[in-house]
Length: 458
Image: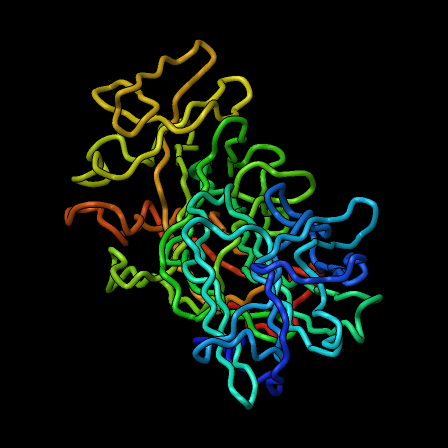
């Protein structure tokens, strides 16, 4: 893992007492002000994986700049931004970005060196930009951050986050412009499955990643990668439960089913274009869920939880639901095990709408069970339960981690949120806990093997 910092301190040369402006006060530029506009060019090494992710062209981005030569921007040791989170729109006529709020310093200050920090997209509502950049006669120490950055709990709503750093002056960059090489600052997580159990069929309808970072502070710094996370993320859960139009995935012994690891398929919902869905999460070093000593996961260990349904595939019981449990055969508190009900089209096998809730043998569309749902003739309801597997490791920003689960010989463990102390309880095996977990890693920016990146253990 790259060095984690608490804040981004780096001296950027000396302070020269010269007047300038910030975007909060319109600069007194010459009539031909466009001649002093700062021209930006961008690059983003990467591949497009789904609609909510960034492609190689940014429609806009935000940029902040500091002028290390301008002492008029210093108040009580804190250096004010020369320009503050200005939104730059792409110029359709070219591949560059300009804004009336982004101009070089006034005449006589053309040599002033500006430091640019940029990011995309908009920050979440939970986050706030915090500038504590200090300055003295020795230079400025950058402490510019996004506090409280959070990822969406619904994997389908997660978006990429990229950042860039560059420096330049009007004297050197008036005509060439400033090039911002954006870098992926999140880790991309994919989950795939394969395997066919000889005695049962497994249907999959969702995935959850628990004990992972869901909120943290991103600190900008003058480096190739533009910034780093503080390394102390708030842990939580993210998930994707199949919804209207998703195909329920079946691991069985029917023709065309994935019987080998080489034909593993994504279990993170419908494919968008040529790429699988994925989670985009805050990188850090995460310990795994210790199901033996901490079954309810009080220590927030990391795990993958798969929403699945197991049915009997033997000649004497074919089609009989084995999990989620339907009676006391497998355990005393079977009825309390968290269950998800999904409406499925009988002909296509695709999900219809979103999840349902069961109360008094009736289905509802809301968790409070106030909005009844009536099944159409072509619809059926299937019950699914969570099955967990511990994972852990060191996630790097800008890397893709693909976890592949082998269900040839088992299902997994009862999830940490399984209630009660009676069997089955959290951490107990479901049928069998012998599920193989392997992980591979590659660089997000090229799709090729990652160099110098440790593959997390499982």
